Amino acid sequence: MLWIKNVHLLDPMQGISGIGSLLVKDGRIAKLVKPGEELNTTEALAVLGADESEALCQLDGGGNYLFPGLIDVHVHLREPGQEEKEDINSGSRAAVRGGFTSILAMANTQPVIDHRALVEFVRLQGERAGKARVYPVAAVTKGLEGRELTEMVELKAAGAVAFSDDGRGIQSAELFRLALEYAKLTGCPVISHCEDDSLAGQGVMRKGLTSARLGLRGIPASAESVMVARDALLAGETGGKLHIAHVSTKESVRLIRAAKAAGVDLSAEVNPHHLLFSEEDVQLTESVYKVNPPLPSKEDQEALFAGLMDGTIELLATDHAPHTWEEKAKPFDEAPFGINALETALAAVWQELVIKRKVKPEKIIELWSANPARRFGLAGGTLKEGAPADLVLFDPEWRERITADSLESKSQNTPFLGKELQGFPVMVWVGGKLVLNRRKVQD
Ligand code: NCD
Ligand code: ZN
Image 1: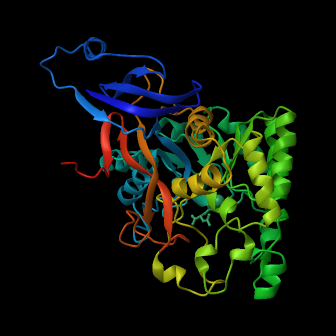
Image 2 (image 1 turned 180 degrees about the vertical axis):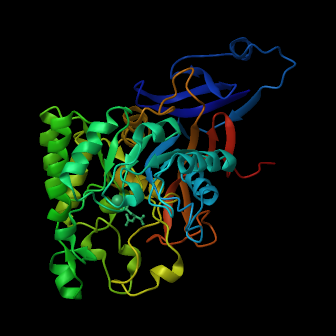
Image 3 (image 1 turned 180 degrees about the horizontal axis):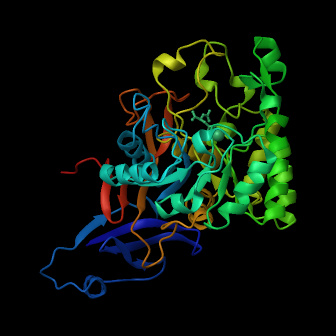
């Protein structure tokens, strides 16, 4: 039994922001002492049903933030098949280090997660690791080949919480329409990686002045937006539940806003790197900036920010895509797409959105915890009594230099390597179990 005192509670689901405390029992939130309310030790023991001889662990949060654990709906854990990049254990350690108590593991592994036994494998490996809750995303099409649908109902029964061919766009409109139709039987969203292959071609960065100057093949913004339009229309027609991954263009934001206004059941996410870096950051010698969809223009970045602020885009997600040093050391056009993000994303967003752009901390928790829980029907996302005790104690002043040694992830392909960031989790609990403790030992 645990009493976390003197913390700034943040719970957008209940509209709470202020100093209070919280009691944990049997892995759940037993009582929330809201700002302005009082609770003495006798009352706390009564709430917990404990007599005084029993140990009640009391923790002084020192005024730091306490919020529901972040839920990341877009993570590549690479197991099975590419464990040299990451595995479920290292990835879930990286997750809790970054403040994520739940993560959705994408299906583009080797083999692809398109079969019941593989969904169960991912789920069980997550449980074995015992850190963040790991929820499998199953493939939409067998082998991510875009030809034949998977057995969605069976995959959901095995533990899948969403379906996606992420890493590849589903080129056939008819197949995607059918996917939305069948996914309705499961109640799970289909996550779309919006990319039209004929437009993207062999491109390696966003098509524009920088790509021309660097002599790199460009991917036009339409490679994404054309697919967003198609998928929104298909979701409208079928009534299926659609989630758009990694939105990166202003046209996509405009289309999503219009589709929502028309009543289409769709949600969308933005990745921190698309807010923080633009095509102008791309350098030939820095393949760490090679990501799919590619880094956008400054104008796109403003549209993404505006979309997040006005509720058009309701989720933040990392698209954590670990790759080995050897792969990323290749020339820009040969290196794989992807940015390592779990351990730096919250601090980077805190610096850029909260410190620099004065976004309220509770907005970040809404985008990264409350909304993902609601959209994907997952436990957590709130400090309500009875909810699982998935909690983050967060120090907004904590500064730290990101180094290869400091990362729990097996890969280091982050643009923040060697740089200092501010705002980190100090303690993290999942189901009441302490899974991260970076508190300095006090004497
Ligand atoms: C992802 C990967 O490496 O699996 N890469 C990326 O650049 N985002 C695939 C994806 O999310 O599209
Ligand atoms: Zn993708």
